[in-house]
View 1 (spheres, rainbow, N blue to C red):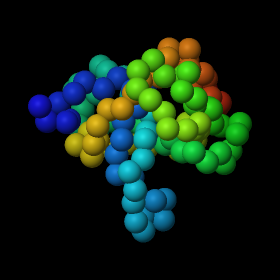
View 2: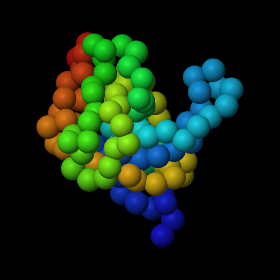
View 3: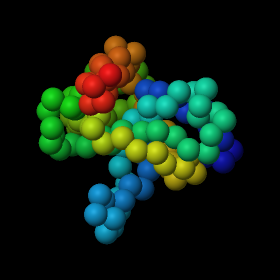
Length: 118
C-alpha cells in the first residue's frame, strides 16, 4: 500500500523529512497532523505542527510525554510547537508512528486558538 493512501486524521503523529527553517538541510522529524480526516482524504496536502525535544515558546507549546499517546511510543519528552504550523504534501510522509490521546489533542487545539487569537 502506498504510504500516502493512508487516511490520516487530526491527532496522528507522522514522520517526515523536514527542512530547517533556513531551508539549508533537513532531517527526519515527527509532526502532529492537525487537519481533519475529511480534508485529508480528499486533499494531497496535510496540515501539521512540528514536534521537537526543544522548548522555545512555552506559552505556545504543549508538552508531550509517553502517557499522552493512545498509540505508539515516544523516545523522550517532547513539545508540540503550536506556533510552527505548515502544510505539506502527504507523499512526503514516511510513516505514521503514533496517535495522541483525545484530551491532549484538545489541549493542542486550545493552544492553537491562542496562537491565532481565535
